[in-house]
Image (tube, rainbow, N blue to C red; front, top):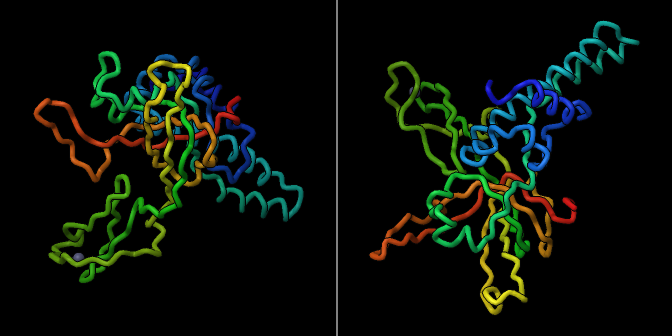
Length: 281
Ligand SMILES: [Zn+2]
């Protein structure tokens, strides 16, 4: 893979080597990552999902290699039976690692993200891109369960299929995958291990106004909603947070163009990380 030349692998190995076995995430500061990954900082910003997935694959591989080597060593020369049992049990507990990139830079101003143009970049150009911004946390919504994948079984032939939902948008299978089965009736298998759900929260972040600034004085501060997995939320109302995430168009609102050719739609951010500024200092 082009993205992972030896020095980057070393970097990830250093990050990962001390993680405990049951660990599922590794947190990386953008500022530390950027200098060793110069060639793909642009890709990370332009095609964040693809690059983050590549990070996850490489980090997971390294994690597995390190931990398996360790456990195999124990299995070959166990001190006693308990030691052997422990190693066997732990083999099952090496999870896929997820790389969480924190404090993405450069910092954009919320008023610029919301405005129609940022320099030569139009607001539409930002959709799907990764950005970083700071703001006051003014509201932390309650966790809601989101279905990521759901297994369905055909009511007639019992054939099973798994559907993946983007951003929690639910749908039903359109046809059965069973041989020559024409059934269109399916049941959701909620207990199946192929059915995956997670909790998500909506966090409202408000821009920080500068009272001294002529432009800011008396202006209504802009807000941005951040949709993020509950697992990753470690902020409270009143905190100043550094948000890293992907700009999205709210699925409930269509993109409309009015006669002045200006666009009207609601942007939100799919959160990659949200960190209290206190933690970053
Ligand atoms: Zn069927």
